[in-house]
Length: 332
Image (spheres, rainbow, N blue to C red):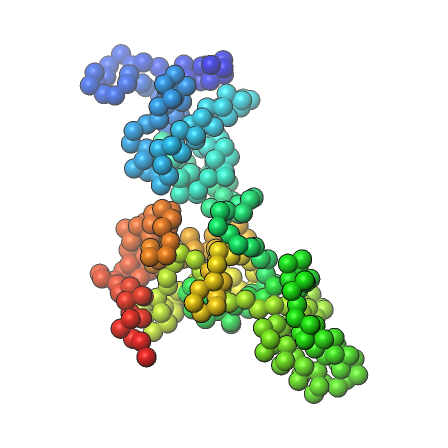
């Protein structure tokens, strides 16, 4: 074991002269219990490869994942110069070392050791992955979203610049020619003809958008947020869900990871906005249900459980109706 880690363990975890002989492990006294507890567990992990039994009550990932975390934390602690000594320093070490892991797990680990939540944690997103997750068909980067086009709490209309590599090779010839002719019509101030051609472009699923003082040909995509189901607009909290989604995306460029297409031709996707995972926000604010029938992500279940426990959003209702059940009853 590195000298720095051994020194910290020795300083933080001094055996007390009294203690409960029935407690698990030797009793320790320290002015920073969270620091000494983690130091003790890492010391034990290096010897036995075992992680704390009750950690699973605070995090969402499997025990196999816990072992990987402690291996990374042990190595990071040994390499830290100087080694962390205060709760704030240890919390930051955890956040930086596990930055590629689920935010719910990092938060749970900090809570388990009663460590402060550093501001850097806000920069972590379950999303912003450097590599595309398994199952992603393709990725899109959108133009700024017009909040007025958001239909409800789990749907979006977005546009992607056709200069994008994926889009440029797929523009229908008729759309391309209409855009060229429209540009020429506008140059000749034949605005009636230009408007006519613009309608043809729109009917083909494209749009000419003013962006940064120039006109851009963009392709329209309808998006269904993957894994959540927000209240319908006529349901309690339907309007609130839409308002929250508008607040999150209005005027923003989004990162869209598309997993497939639903029966209505919408792209089923995970949405990220300035490092924020949109579905996470909607679930944590109690403005959407975890759509378990189509998505089994454990973090989604945890975020819904958190909102329900706090009785926020739709969870202020004693027995809120599920959107999918409401739709069945109100079919036309």
